[in-house]
Length: 373
Ligand code: DAH
Image 1 (cartoon, rainbow, N blue to C red):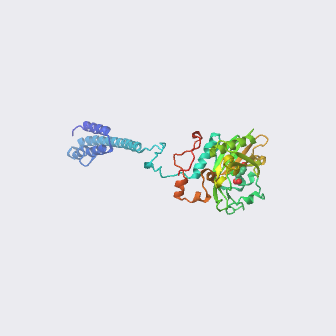
Image 2 (image 1 turned 60 degrees about the vertical axis):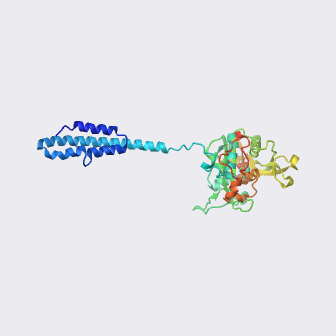
Image 3 (image 1 turned 90 degrees about the horizontal axis):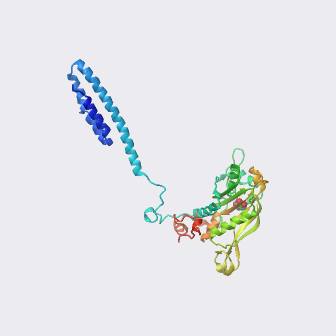
């Protein structure tokens, strides 16, 4: 029988040079297939004498094993290359900005005014160094009430129209959080001061009429530091109101109030006029008599609340505030009815919603206002 080394070397070279799984398969068939070059030689073994058959058979088997191994290795390599190629072709750069205009659908989709308003509020407080914190919608009584200095017999509990979950084995009941204030507690327990957080989120109260919804949104703020005082509270909130409503000389008024978790407490009003039956945010002045709209609750964090969170009130103090998001969105964008926020009415959303690229930024000044008409 002829020397099989040159044939084996030829086949191994072809395998090494194969550029695709298809070419490789063709080489395999031409070498080891039913009518392959090596297969035919194997068949020829029967014509040899016993000694020659033994020698040639061993050589053929060794060549066959070597070729099979080289085919397997090449197949693996080519398949991996093909996969890498395909993945590279299918790669999508998710960081690319969306295209304005018809192909991407950006001309039809709208950002809900609640989402837009939350983004605007975050942008303003973000500039002041606040970071966003979040907490669960289902709360423990401790975080929603007790730690906020609202013990079980406190009258403020009745005012909250709380949604209770069925009692647990130990008789305690979880609640749907009635305000975003429990996130103050969660944050103070989790992180050491100084703290500067803003907490936008859903809140729940068993109340439903034209000005109340059982689910609504609030944003909470909390600042804890060694030297933070009422002046910081006032400066921060005046700055916020003027930036949010985009009225540089917006009158802002602090009225003494009461909240169990702050002392002293103040409600914050912004100036407006109702001359001619039209509500206008800003100075009354020339437009008519000065009127006021309440938009925020605030105060210096109560020492007992700090103690409940393991913070020494002799060392740290701070301020907190809470605001209804629907309310300020309605005022800023002239949305007359609270219930329409949750109607999922596309015509409403097209009218009051925002273009996806209308991203709030304090750098652009006015936080780019105006509902898309
Ligand atoms: N949690 C209050 C509410 O839902 C709002 C509030 C008032 C939050 C004063 C505060 C605050 O952090 O200081 O009515």
